[in-house]
Length: 91
Image (cartoon, rainbow, N blue to C red; front, side, top):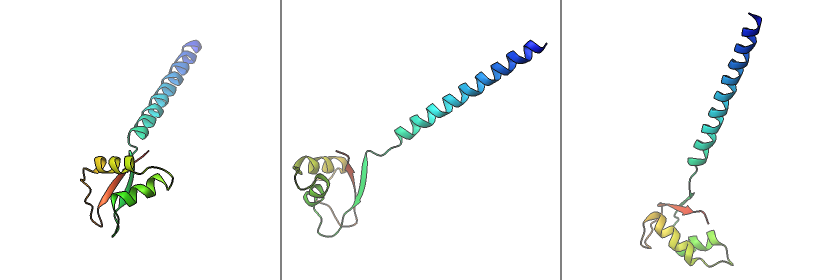
């Protein structure tokens, strides 16, 4: 009789640890999948795609690929208005 209790204790411990492992793995998978692919930027008066791209890319980098990426990510043809929220893709 005593031996059966030890086995059930081991089985119960195994079930609990397997459940915790599955829960941790699913939370890690959800956290990675919900991460946005960029950041948001609210257009200010006087901003252009070029000026935003220069700020994102930095002064030494070529802003042309960033301009193209911003335009493609937001489905804009180059015309932006103040107050509009743009998604800035990560480099």
